[in-house]
Length: 431
Image (cartoon, rainbow, N blue to C red; front, side, top):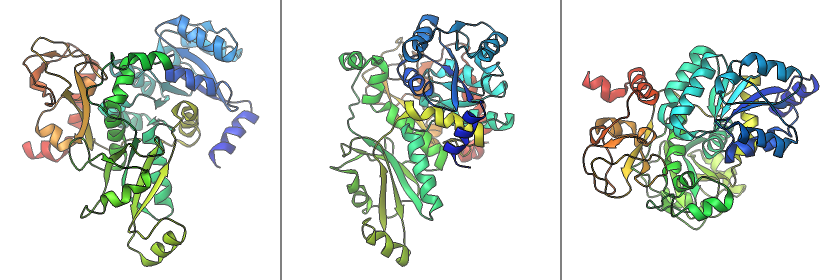
């Protein structure tokens, strides 16, 4: 049974898929706007630190005033009366029987980790619109979810999920992708919340998050998630990022490579300006004859692309896939394949406190996990709140011994647990 028919069946049976949404910011509002209008899914409740913001989400988008709840039992009672609810505690969502899947849409690493772990412990599927969390401890969370018999997945509609769906399609028709990545319109490592403030305010987004898009951090986080799901790596730190006029030009850019065999990358400034691509190699003469006949060129490299991404619209579909089929849109294969390390955006001085993803201090860039571990590099996902021990010049990668970590953070414990669970060839050799 395909997804749309399965969702329709749940609607016809009067058993819509119960979604609990954590967060009420820009992307969460977009998710709610679609979920409130989709037959077969039900936005049961929203959890947010500020209840007024969660309440406004339902009132403005759904035309209904939700009830505040403090316990899972109260939430289930509201759901039984078909009344949406709000809470400031995400554990209320995961503890309620009426919620089948939790969507984490805050983008915060520490908070998101607590939410995901609690949901897994409560037996709920988890959809992440939190690429920073996924890139930082996604392999560990996936292992914990598998042990609990639930799904944790990044979302349809965002670039990693769109790319993974394309890769899965290509493999299903007998083609093997050797390269995949994002179409990136703009990249400037020096962008900050201040340079992005006016644009962020014009579109109702947070300036620091917008800066993480412009400075390439989010690009690296997304492609680390894709690498971890495919087993692909990067050709070098930061990737190639070839500039081209159109995504159709990508295969020609890689013909000079002796062999492409599992790489994530991006193209810069290419039309259509958004979306993802995948490149397949075929050495079969019959397959190549047909591919050329159907306008994909002479090969041996063939370009496929999706020219859009709509995470806010497709996140409820990811929730449905998890509940109905136990299917993760995109999740790590095992241990991490790539990491996103913190690099000084400007000269940093001892005593400074780092402001994390999209801030004034650092940008994130991708590298293969073996390199990151060998050099003891600091992941961008754990950089926020760290205090500089030493001066570090602009564009140098930060090491763990360059900083003091904040005390008693969950994310640091999870990183240690992840490296113990997935030590990799380097750690095994050191043992």
